[in-house]
Length: 312
Image (cartoon, rainbow, N blue to C red; front, side, top):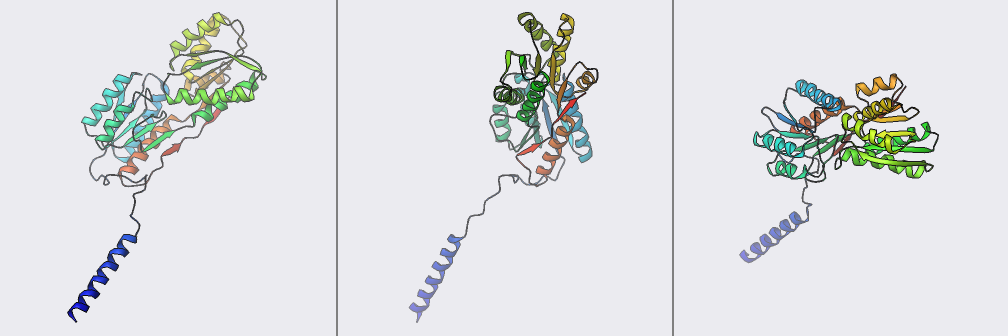
């Protein structure tokens, strides 16, 4: 009898073990926080490529308003378009043990090691406007820059009658914004505006003064220019200044960002169009997304911000 009871017990134990093994192993969704929701004071670190550009000033202001509304602290670091300063700023915020990092990279490759340091420290990272080419990023908040480049190309092609000589002023090499806007623009021009010829493609680093100087040189080298697309408004406004100083007329200028000066230039008839992003919304969504994540909420890996074309 004892042997029979022992045998029954063994059979029951084996059955229970097999049943347990048959159950699927629970997995944590990719979007779920890997750390417990924060209950104390939340401090966010916002590292911006440069505050010498009105676009990023507006982005910062949008982030600050959202932080104030959410009752969280926001520390802003200006990298001044210097990758080394951006890395140092991120490392300083890591040492301060911020709750999360919101990063607008100066260079999508150069920022990767700093993001990886944040990953190692267990600090969640969110990228804004410009992406990173490595490291673990919870969410990317940005406009579709490829679509924006295409939008600019389509407008410019129609404005010059589908043919003529075109110049492209490029942003900082290595940034996702420059890469994606250039891709969208060139893809459309090569497939849907084949009678137009891109006669010059030069970087002016998203800077107005450089846009002026670079376009001065292009004007001297190119006696005929029908249209110009710049990866941001700062460069296109510099190019317009150069054309006015040289007495060159009849050029269609198209920018990107819709900063206040550019919108005024559209109203004045100097700038034909600019692709409108919403930097204040980007900053706002970045803060709100980080706060939601830190509170234990699920967030998307990519949060798009709509684009519009501003014309007279």
